[in-house]
Length: 206
Image (tube, rainbow, N blue to C red; front, side):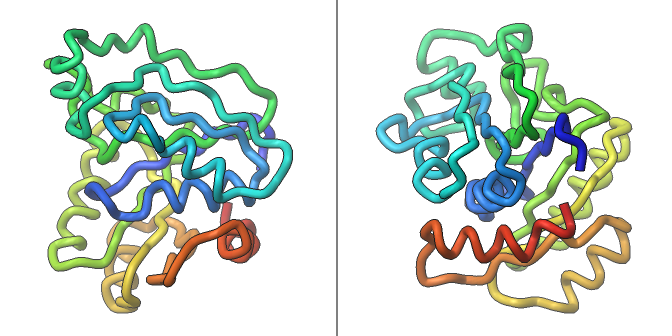
């Protein structure tokens, strides 16, 4: 692992476990964390959630470039706030530590009428896709993989979440050739101790 490595966390959909995955990687690498765009839930943001879940003392939590009021797609949430998201205002924080960037949803989530989450990713980023097991998840995962490939963005690894589905995981890994970073089970709760356990499991694959 290089100290300057950036891990860009995307999901196949919403509510797939992206924030938990980001917390695990942040803990494992003692990385900095950044959520460029927060849409809604400003009283308890994803940054707040990750901060509550990790226990290493080295992580810096960088402020959102945009903190929007409505829990919706960023382009709509911004419009409801009377603004338009501009890529040039989304500037990566400077750090000499690994950086975990958590996307607002999936790869092609629109930021405005032109740009999507994909436009925030650099080819040098270690792109981690979180794929939750549900009916249709194979299709969503492979479509995301193809969209990355078409943009010259290599998929670094996959984190699965949810009820175990070994055949689904086997098929997706075979078709993408991606690294299996780990699988997040349906835990009754997540707290710093649970996150530490997953961090130890995932670290060798990061």
